Image (cartoon, rainbow, N blue to C red; front, side, top):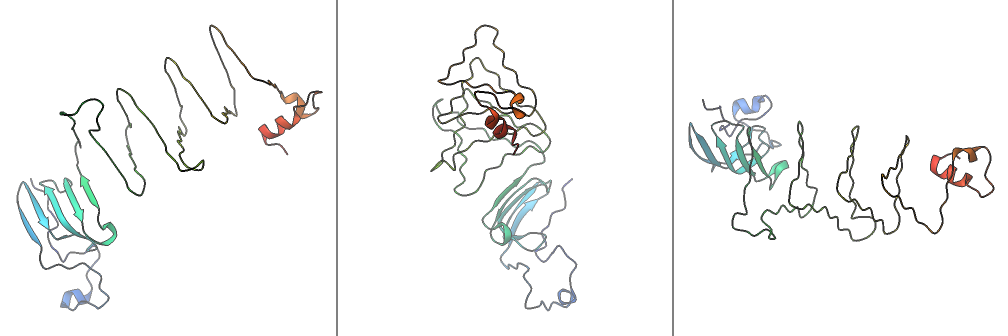
Length: 221
């Protein structure tokens, strides 16, 4: 059964005032108006040119709807969603391409000239699968070009045949709990200077120093 659709161009989201009832709209009325709307459709779907959304704040240049009103594509013209394109699908949304491309050519490109790109799964997983995966952040200076990976309230697991961490300036591993390094075959540690400090220096510094390291790492003044 087809879902009722909003095709009444005068419909607004709030109750109509007396001015609406009499047909005398106030001068400060900001509801969108258009007199050239065209709609074609039947019980399977419709396409509208100049559709006014239910809140009367946005005109859609094009609105494509299926029999289920939740299944639609909107190309908005003005208002708070000016120039925006929105797609809704109550089922699976799929894009397949690249049948005629080779493995080293671009087949799907998502570009945002300004602004963030957000991929969100509100009740599911986000999976990225590929023969190879590159995460690259290019910044103009050392204040940008950052990559952040957070597992808030969960675990971060890295598993590979070989893992290399290469910090050009430095790298740091920090935990407020326990730390463990295990090598079942051979472990190599190399540095021009190796310094080991325990909490014992908190009360009395060692003869080779270390209390300053304790203070800086535990943030004790």
